[in-house]
Length: 240
Length: 298
Ligand SMILES: Nc1ncnc2c1ncn2[C@@H]1O[C@H](COP(=O)(O)OP(=O)(O)OP(=O)(O)O)[C@@H](O)[C@H]1O
Ligand SMILES: [Mg+2]
Image (cartoon, rainbow over all chains, first blue to last red):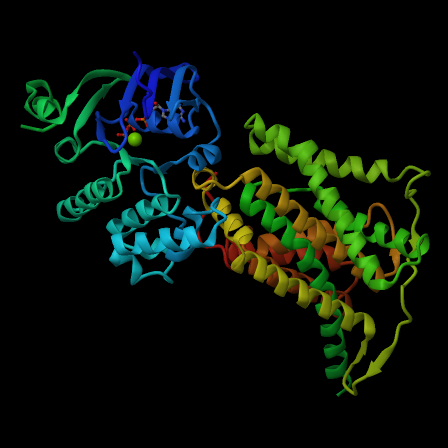
């Protein structure tokens, strides 16, 4: 018998014109799980997340979320269904204040009480953000901007959080701080997380399972423990 | 003393004209801000505001405030329709900006010549009936009329309303987010097409207001009356730094005051040429306009 899955990507392909960015990709995540997708520059990691959020058009295959087919739904619909994105390069709204950025995360939520609850929860998770609420988001440090981008995504009360290279351009110290926060969000709030990373070591240490993507194809998948031991991975991604 | 009061008088007149330019320039700059496109048909929306006002006054003889309200609703709906019919289908196909620009020019010509039909507005100059008697008040150094006062107050209130909307409401926050990063705006759940429509309507309403105010101040209307004010307001928007709200307002006043001063002290024939000269010199000094900081990414 087939058990209803929480979230599943089934055999999708994405082309940018003649460029095949993704070919027959399948990825699965269960509720409360945290998984990572690792791969080199240009492997197709961001494209995979963009196909989930409706930014990149899926040419073939399906994306299922809570037994609904969400393939090629527009981004503003996807986030309402409970999938929030923290994009590569954070993309905070730079001239808007930190507070306004957070409020925009809950843009589609009508209930003021829920917005307030989410807001307080986010500030408790990221106390460093709280001290900077009235500051333009562009003036935050890289690490703070990453926290804000994650906070903004959490404002929508997501069931599934997509993180595109949360460690990009951050010092090792801030990176490990961010990964701890990601783990905490997953543990304490039960939010499922798909994390795309070039920092394979940190990503695999934080997640339960992982997928390795090369030239738009999944070439390996398994538990993070296994992947961390895999000689191929050690050679290609862990820089041993 | 004579010259001083003459200068002051010209300043008052310049502010009056500048206020109208500012109202039009806001529409150019807001649309540019969210779509990076120049809506060349915007000057014609201004013209339609004057004509809607004309019909509301002559055919329906409505009270003044209703004339303003209905004409502004009319131009808001016109701007909404232009965007929906002419621009949206192209955007859906990810057409390059140059296609949008040439379409906007086409829409502008279409409006001008379509409404030139005898059964519509006709190509003639029409006297605009002021909805109230003109009164002047001699303030010793200069004369101010109730038209000046109306234009100052209407523009001032619109600006306050606009600032409130953009900086204090949820809708305004969405507009600013869209202007910064359209894709990210969608990702947080903003229905960007709705915000685009809303922005066009807002710009349309302000241009419509400008149209009636202009017709009241210079009471002759014509289907082509939007061309020059449209171009000058566009210049105002560029001068202030296109995409920047307060830049458009300040730019409008700079252009309006310069125009009146050139007419008064140099020559009224040189007036329009001078506006372009100002823009040219200005852009040499500040290529991104008064408040523009960075070079636009295309
Ligand atoms: N909008 C686009 N148009 C055309 N090609 C694209 C587009 N976006 C991505 N690509 C191509 O698709 C491939 C996958 O890109 P993608 O951004 O998904 O890689 P990535 O794994 O996220 O890389 P990185 O680690 O550098 O972020 C690349 O070859 C890229 O050049
Ligand atoms: Mg990427």
